[in-house]
Structures are given as structure tokens and as C-alpha cells.
Length: 122
Image 1: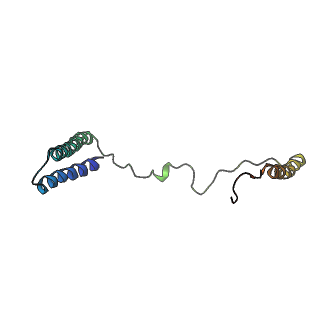
Image 2 (image 1 turned 120 degrees about the vertical axis):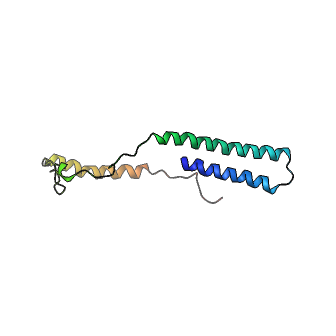
Image 3 (image 1 turned 90 degrees about the vertical axis):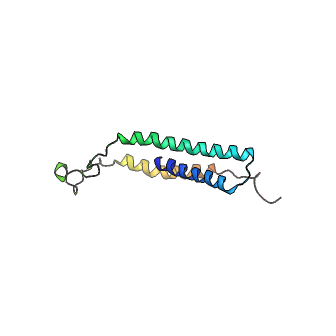
């Protein structure tokens, strides 16, 4: 945000300078536009000053990006926790799984509506 205000202030100041140097005669609307551009540049400069005061109180923390020591790690990286054993499937569970795909196919065929009113050549 600080850099945005800095470039905005420089750009608007340059615009005012260019606007004043290129025209020899200036109508009232032109003068008002140049004054408003200068005012926008002034507001950007004031914002820079206010942000600079805000950043003065901040101190950079040291060693923020340093990884933790390897001694603190309790679990070795290579080992993974063991998964719980699954109970064996019964014959009733196997029969239910076998029936599900057959039932799932029937509604799919019945759900496909035919679009008679849409599309086609006229």
C-alpha cells in the first residue's frame, strides 16, 4: 500500500506538471481538472506520511523463518502411525454390496427423460 501511494503521488504530480507545461491557454474547466489532480496527489502524499508513522513502531522479529530444531521432534519422520485393523466382512455384508450395483443401474435408465420439445431444425 505504501508503494502504491508513492507511485500514485509521483504519477499525479507528473500529470500536473505535464498539463501545465503543454498548454498556453487554459480554460476554466482545464484549470479545475488540474487542481483536482493535484489534490488527489496531495491526498496520496498525506497517506504516505500517515503510513510511515505506522511502520516506524514495528520491529522486525528475528529468526521467524528458522525451522524448529530436530531434537524437539518426538516422532521420527520415517515411521507412520499404524491403522486400525478392519473387522472381517460377513456373508450378509458381501451380499448387500453385490445387490447395490444392480439396483443402481435400474433408476439411471428410468431417470433419462427424452427432450421432445427442445432442439431440432425448424
